[in-house]
Amino acid sequence: MSAFHSSQLTFFTAIAPFDRMELPHLQWMLEHMRLTYYAEGEVIVSPEQLQVEQFYVIKQGFVHGEQSVAKVSEEDTWLELAAGECFPLGALLAHRPVASVYRAGKDTFCFELSAQDFHALLGISEPFRDFCTRRIANLLEHSKQVIQAKYAQSGSEQQSLTSPLSTIIRRSPITCSSETTVRKVLEKMHDLRLGSMIAVDESRRPLGILTLPDVLERIALPQADLDQPVINLMTTRLTMMEPHVLAQEAALLMAKEGIRHVLVVDNEKLVGLVSEKDLFALQRIGLGRIGSAIRHAREVEELQQSASDIRSMAHNMMAQGVAAEHLTQFISAFNDLLTSRVIELEFAKTAFSTVIDSIGFCWLALGSEGRFEQTLNTDQDNALIFSVPADMTADQVRAELLPIALRINQTLASCGFPLCKGKVMASNPQWCLSLEEWKVTFTSWITNSSQEALLNSSIFFDFRALSGDKSLADKLREWLLNIASDNGRFLRQLAESTMSIKPPLGVVRDFVVGKENKLDLKLNGITPFVNTARIFSLAAGVPHTNTLQRLRASGLKMNIPTAEIEAWIDAFLFIQVLRLRHHDEEKEKGFSTEALDNLINPEQLNELDRRILKEAFRQARKLQARLALEYRL
Image (cartoon, rainbow, N blue to C red):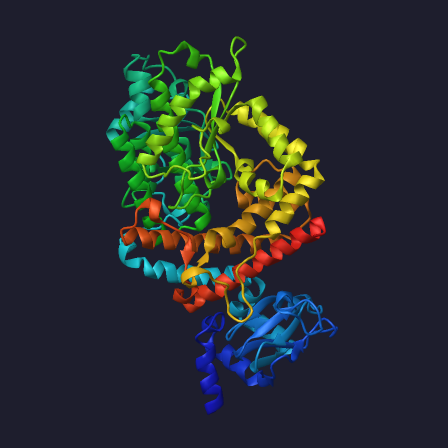
């Protein structure tokens, strides 16, 4: 190999995806590449060229992406590519012209590979093909490995929740027929030291399950007839999953539903049983123990310990490489359990009140909790919706509920969920409203609000029923989707306010930073995704509150290409990963929950994460471009 190729090989093996390519394929690429110089301001490729002839990798300098061929102002530049980045992948893969002008931002050197050789390389190198077709997803996989390596010391002894259920099954399940007597089943469970017994039919399709807690509750205490068919006393509402489902999905379902077993079925036939003990043994701090402790807590001190355990659980899951989507759902699910328990305890103190007993109410989660997207840095965003008995007024009901809501908010604050600085809490009379009052409030926002007012009220559109009479929230959601989807002016106003929040990509520098050279991953990072997904869901009549579910469901109705939607989702999830890592690092340094922030210095990120973050912000811009197209902004 020549000295030239040797030095270039060193350059390429330090950047993705070339660091994963087989050496012969990398050498082949270098042999077919040439190094080209472009002076500052020179156009490298533009839409005027009907066919893209080269694949470019920047060796030195940087390249601007612009919207017009004429020399543009700084505002016209929508992306900046630096050394190690490549372009224009989309145009090459689709055999179409580029959509933007690529211009040298300063004196720049690029490695160039002909389009013909580019497609040949796609055919021989799987890592290269995977990167080009799933660019941001591929980069995320690189980053995930870095994250796991970083947390390896704290999580080295743990197995992974990212394993499929088929690998968690300890042994073939012991079964019986539905007609086997209770007595024989109990004898078999005793002899084999089983914690459960599953009834199946002749095709091994599960019919019911009997567990040790069932033995106490359904057989021993009521002194049930032991000679009756066991199916009579079994749980027949079964939770079943297929072998390929990841353990983290089963664990999340157990945490949410309070169940202890998941039946693993393949083509409806029983192949295994996974218990909470099997899954939660994967955790240093068991999810089952946290959930059980919350459900049985009687004192605030017990809930405070559970809140601390939830944060430790999040750290352990990050060590295992659990995806950000699942991790934020885990955190939100356990925070839901904790909040629900606080609500139960506080309302139990007023059980003697016949007035409270006659009131139908529902505790609403708002904001990130309403979207199932909570990180470790979360304050309280909640509200109350209630029905008004015939012999009372809304003000009278509110007077009964507000003192209880205040105690709930204060208890949650003592558990590490700070009071909302904007007072968006159920204890604020402004957000403790009857169903009809909520309709009036939403109508006012939809028909009469300024952009600023809409921004401030946006988290209310993410409401989710958490505890109480959930039909009240369902009625409000159904009404809201009907009125919002038909109001084009309102949706356009929301779009205009969303477009005012710019992803922090710079022209002269990679990122636009604020004080202390930091950027806000919440305001300028995830907010464009959250707001746009909310608008799409309201316009499409999608009832989901989760950002990713909103993007997928509304994107399908709007005929947006799946690849485009998944790129947005990957970008959103990476920013969430950075937030989770940042919060976890601050907790490790002794920061209190109240002191956690979303501000990072991009200069302190490793090169890979800086590169992915830039790509994530570009996806935010593309999402906003789609929004602007929909509403002609």
